[in-house]
Image 1 (cartoon, rainbow, N blue to C red):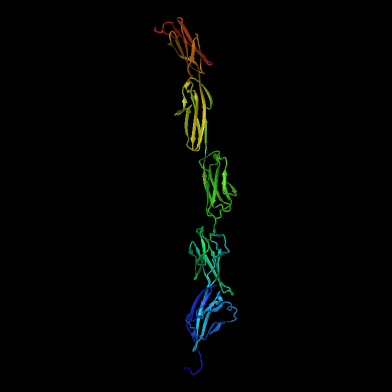
Image 2: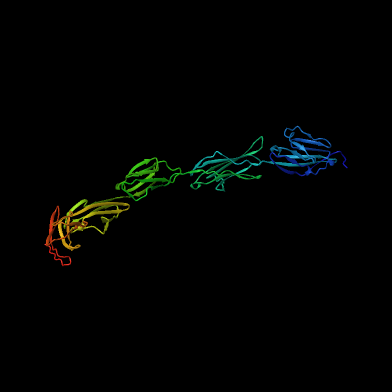
Length: 482
């Protein structure tokens, strides 16, 4: 028993409680283990003042504190209920219990958290230059407690500030009214060529939520041209009269909009990477170049060969020669490469054609010379006509039907000889080939007679005779040619 009327205040150990921003929180008094029969008065308070007081068998009295008067209530077990919690509720609340003998205090530390918003990308650039520091983007998350972290990634690998190629500046600002944090991170990056198609992301990290990634960011990587390449777009081999298109490309990004082409030593600057040579000749054979307009030392070259084929025959058109004369045909070929030569007479292939030492009628005809190489082909022709006066090579007699006799006169000559018989009869002639033609006549002699065959053309004539008897065909024929 005490000697004076003093009440002892006993403070029970500090408890902790966590709640989500905007939720309703229930703060227990002595873990909800108070018995109403042991309590005279319960007061909930915080560092700045009272919230509510509940006396035994009376309604709770709520303080006029503007922060709480419409948001607090007390449960039957004396737990404090706060609705729509904000960061101002992140503090220590104390439940003071007045009993019969003692005053007990049960402090509870309340922590409020709010998850971050999705990462927001601002101040986004579109391109970065190799070797030049570039402010790529700013990543931001807001309305969060405690403050969130932001990490930048390239191709899923985290980036760390090295104060050289990578600079990351992160700021955390706390709103004075809401006490919520905004985290902002800015990425400054110096690109290399290998960053083409690289994917950058920013990730928001928070102890109360899963990591959140931004959409991938892909930047155009610009870098100067170090090399040019010159290509021949047209399909070769090339011959005179063709068009040839040249294409110049550079390895820089963006590529140049204009190039310098060197055509036959002359510089031509065009607002394109294409240059076309039209109707080329053999004089266009040589090396062609292209370069940057502002740097002629960055240059590329390509050789172009224009194939050509010139064919001249010593004999052209229609050639008329006399029987027995000689003829030499030569082919003069000027070509950019090895050429193949072939001959034809009519539709027949010839192994070769050189000198005619002694022309015959069979040498007459249309000759064709074909010279070819590397996609080129030239054809030259001439017609050879061998002329000569008629010559009767043979005059014969054959048995016909019954008493009929068939006489045949074989004549050579060019132009084609015509034949005149000294008798009447049924005549016929064969085809005229190689300067030779056979004329025939069928007669029925009444007695012995001499028949003449006269062959003629513009160059002369020839005549031969044959004796024909009227003997029966079963009797031996006696023929005498005069």
